[in-house]
Amino acid sequence: MHRILKIVIMVVTCVAVGYLSGEVTRESVATWYPTLKKPSFNPPNWIFAPVWGVLYVMIGVAAGLVWTKIDDQKEVVKKGLSFFAIQLGLNALWSYLFFGLHNPLIALIEIALLWLMIYETFIQFNKVNKTAGYLFIPYLLWVSFAMVLNASIWWLNR
Image 1 (cartoon, rainbow, N blue to C red):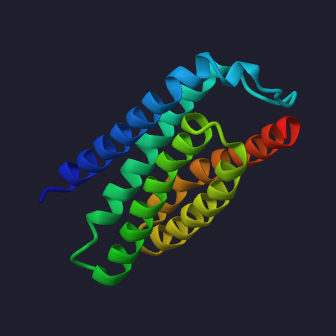
Image 2: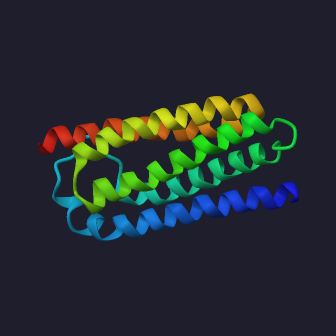
């Protein structure tokens, strides 16, 4: 399969997961989320969609770049893509736990696991392709911020 096609497939996959996560959050953002106490550093709601959109494209490109190396570094690529799949599933699950179930505590526990899987994906991707590793850094930073925000919202609303 051609390199560009692999990248496109991964980007489309990530954007699709993001879209589905957005569908889970949409109603709660308008109804439940506004009722929560939030910390002073809570960003405006409009910022989340564009940030996540860019991040999904970046991690999709990263995964595609790693996938292109499957013939050269089969075991490391398979391991990295396995962690990638796990973290992408956990990413979607967080939206369901926080916005779907309205459960910031369970979402906080889950986002800690998500962060670890993102970090491990970063480590594995970095072994295969430095650019792919670098593309994961903003995602890791944003999820770090999201974890602090999640913890603050849980704390303020317990």
